[in-house]
Amino acid sequence: MESYDLELGNVVKEIKKNKHKLVCIQLPDGLKPKAAEIADYIEKNTKARVVVWLGSCFGACDITEIKGIDLLVQWGHSEWV
Image (cartoon, rainbow, N blue to C red):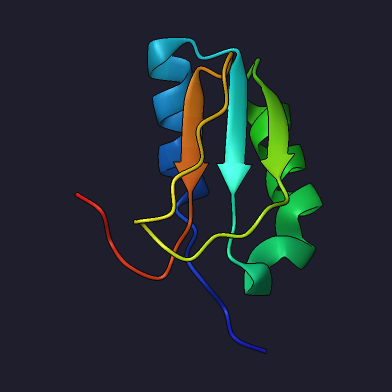
């Protein structure tokens, strides 16, 4: 099984720095089985609540719009700077 560096430490830092309360994570299909584990990690290390976007995700060009979230964290196949 492949191992990925999801940079969860950087996600936690960003959430804490900006005091985000509601965070949405968006994952490609291959990472969706890890969604609960990722959400748990973020919630245990911050004061944020995490929701998981279960719709499709085709990379950095496929960003969802959800009202009411403070931060969208997206793991896609291409980098978006």
